[in-house]
Amino acid sequence: MGWWRSPIVVVVAAAFGVALWHGGYTRGGLLAFAAVGVAGVALVRPAPSAATTALICGLAATGIANLVSLAWHDQGSTPIALAAVAMPLLVWAGSSAQPELRRWLPLAVLALALCTGTAGLAGFALHSTPLAERIDGVWRAGGTFEYPPALGLVCVCALAAALALHAAGELDATGAVVSAALLTAAAAASFDRVAWIETAAVLVLFAVRAPAVRRTVALTAAVTACAAVAVLAIAHPHAAALERHLRHGPISSRTDTWREAWDLARERPWIGYGPGRYAAAESNGPFHFLVVSAPPPTRAHNAVLEQAVGAGIVAALGTAVALLAMLWAGCRGLASRDPRALSFGVAAAAVALSGLYDFTWSFPPLLLLGALSAVAVWEQP
Image (cartoon, rainbow, N blue to C red; front, side, top):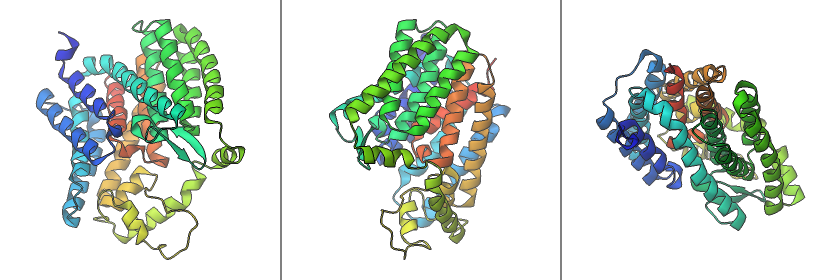
């Protein structure tokens, strides 16, 4: 049967295709992503396995809690709730077609990252928004996700996918090195330090676990070093701006935001302030009277706290269960010596961990990537 006739390929390709339209982050993108979820269920008629129950139930609980909060607050954010409900349906759909999922998911991830990474590098080189943006004096590539850490995350996942495809003989050495060069350059241009660390970790992981790709890994490491130098030359940030960016703690800088999000969640523990209304809640929160020198954060930078503020304790618990299930699958994949399982483990773990300190879970295609990767790990033969 041709690959284009496989329902799961249609679902995954369409869902990731939404990511090329503002990363599925706009209201229109969220609505389109929800429509993909409905189409996926109609095509696949899924039947979940026991291994995916925790992930599916967690995401479903989050989606339902968002719908309830949305109805209670009478908001006009229907696409957000629809996307939240569509997510477990998409994962459920993936669980019924494992051979196709394991085969085509790395290709879909690689294609997505190459497209948005190329767009990000173009925007970065031309200083063109919204494909790139100037943050605190430093130009950073965001690609079609329009958010640098999201671009860095998908490039890290795609780098693992490219090395896995090369190890499986489905991507030749030239294609693997060229793809890796573009992906590492885009990750470097995002100026996301977590993406830099994860890129190095992926190269080390595959060098140790997949001896067949060690030469390609070595070439990729050399290309990555060159890409980093080129990125610095093109960005040419002021020394003070670069020093300020490098000193900015990705975790320590979030503690005040997390503390305030916790206080906001305690104010309305059952129904929240409404999906996507963290900024509005923060402006009326317990610290709204304080005078600050910088604009207040518009996100909680933690998926569980974000859901707690937006939709209450049920949504927070559902997100926590889904996050832990995804991280568990990621660790299992990282312990494998099968290159595909390694790539799935990288994606599941990276997406899950990003939910602890950033708002990358607000991008449905990235959450889908992590969830489907977790499913693929659990269902490996």
